Image 1 (spheres, helix red, strand yellow):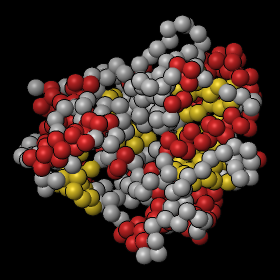
Image 2 (image 1 turned 60 degrees about the vertical axis):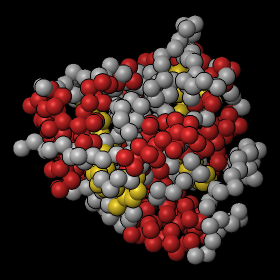
Image 3 (image 1 turned 180 degrees about the vertical axis):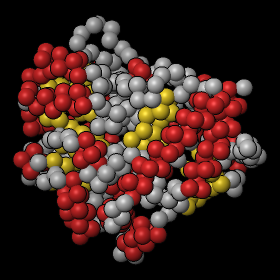
Length: 445
């Protein structure tokens, strides 16, 4: 039986969106929230519990965004909420060191194997700080990133980022152009670009320019071009950049503590010099971090000459949320297996539902991350941003609206991962697949 399309009142969300557009660019504080690529009115959320959101109009939505990844335990988790409430009674910010930041640093270093960690307030802050550190350590100025890898909105990283257009006008190896207005070409000129999952291209770039490269930064598993999973050959090429004296920086803002307690780095056997974290490390509050070997991290001020600071770094509420989240993950050794089993079952159900409706899709999934690309290709064959960019975004937008109308809140972009949490169970899986079957049938009609 097909899931019925639910009446979806949006009057309150529409009113809030209109008010927001008068005082906020585009009516949102992060672009993808505006629903520009899928159409319709973005839902303004009033509350979140477990696997569900409730919007301003009172509609309950089964959530697969999880605040774009942090809510691996589910929304409003009692242990996290309790830890924040406990910390709150002692103050909201000190501007001085506190015990919780020591405890969280000890936990992060133990779980990930890094020697030192520095807390910041966002993933963007973590990646830009790690790159400054790499430049300070090596004395070099160029960095290498990969097409479709998103590392935050710092100027030097908004090059071929996410859905940024391919631009290589002068034909120079590694050349690229900014993905955003306001990024000077001089900044973009310090960022060399290669294709993710193309080991030959990376080897060629490093052979030609490796002596100038301070660092190669990459997402171990890409999330902002849709889920892209690295090949063993590409992982080997990443490690070869070290032979050129460049540092290897793993951006685990999305994958850190999501794919395993050791992140994608631990799951895939990576050996980066620096790792950046965000999202889960703060348990839903604004936290980022970067860390690595002692001899590298000791270049950071006040120990060393590379300056980085932040008024709210190590905020006691954020540290409390991060401690509670990582402690809960460590206390549940079967969680990652359950997340993986759910995501695998979700992928199989989506595949069958689309096939029955005659709708071509290609699914990539790993752990609790999944993207269903609307294109005609075998599962697992979407490996690069170029592959992903061939997706039918109009078909995805129609399918997204079909899911939303049936009470399932999917990521509002073809080029994003969805995230499964520990509170998604059989009831949520069945409801999702019921909605997907009907949405695919609508699309295939």
